[in-house]
Length: 441
Image (cartoon, rainbow, N blue to C red; front, side):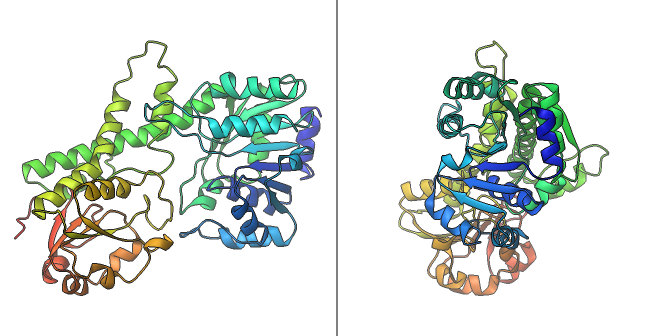
């Protein structure tokens, strides 16, 4: 199929779409296109996830406004069907790939899922189809990894028998549908015509700009924007550590810094987690590891942000002497507020360190099934509590009841959620990350 014909089928919604990987990105993408009238087939390796979706149920927990209702609607209307069988993609006109692209312990990309998905797709790829990688990848990945697999496994030639592009997602848990609709996208095509057709496709669900570009530009833009955020968070965290050492309050410092025109300062906190920010800077840095570019800032920012849960462990040891055998409550295990996503959670690092120190750990998280429960019951006999995730529920904590249930009185706030005066009134010794301006009894 020529691109002009595919473009016409996009406009009249007759093109058949497919999405590989039905997680935090792929599932809402599939549902949005199905809502716009496309027939969408979804593929995922997890049968349990497939079963839930085909019943019209969302496998994603946490607060995701509108997602459950949207999935139920498009499944009920017959516009979205999911399976584990790649053979179902043999008549798909457009295939979007949304699989994980992690890095290993040496910060090198590991593309097992991506390679497997591309290889399986290539074996059933329809002639004239458009393949779009939405996953965030190291710059150069489409040229060096995706394209060779597609051509070798299918026997097809790029821009003659099939077309290839990348349009990196810009989402975060808790705002999946909102971000997919409201945030701009970069449509990187294997040639200009492919990029323009991709832009037409995404404008159907995206209400912001969709900018045509080439592969490498799209790949760099996505990794650079997350790296920018990581660097800015690292700056805020380093200022917080400086404030602690100097007896200052980072939250007051931040407030006053931001009054200077053009001086934004992000929130410091107990650590940076999730699937994107902990890895995307390494994807960007890895793209030039053999080209002699002296990458210095990115590793430094990563080191600072990875250190923050270690610093929280230090605060626990400082304020709870002889912690071995003590019982400590952790508030929040997900990496992000009001989400069940615990990938690369800072709480995981803290829990591991506390375990190694012989601490008895109790975890509360209102969005993760194994950690749900009554806060007061979980607080019984605890020497200290540590707030690691800014779940909105914790803004309404009954501090007096918490203090009554606990054996000790130390409450460490890693997210600036607890009002100091309210904590003092409840009889809690509040320790705020980035703030030693108040003496703690």
